[in-house]
Image 1 (spheres, rainbow, N blue to C red):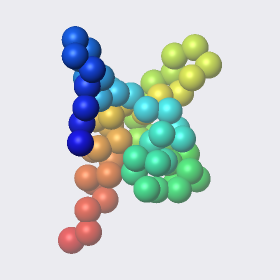
Image 2 (image 1 turned 60 degrees about the horizontal axis):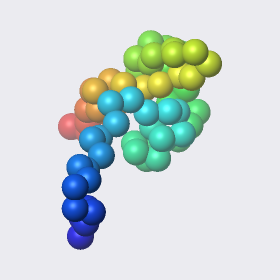
Image 3 (image 1 turned 45 degrees about the vertical axis):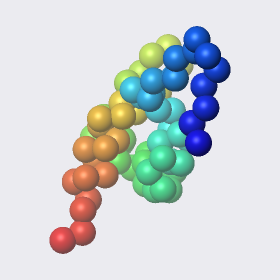
Length: 68
């Protein structure tokens, strides 16, 4: 059940994820994520020292691997 305190708004979904978050969200191994980044298959952002994976890029990359 999603409960919010009166007067608070729910947090929006993140638009970018750290590498560890991307691993948890996707269920794909860390080395697979890094290989996809290195090959250019998975787009990332570099902000300061952080490397982030835009949510839409992660979803598109996962969708490109549909079994079929």
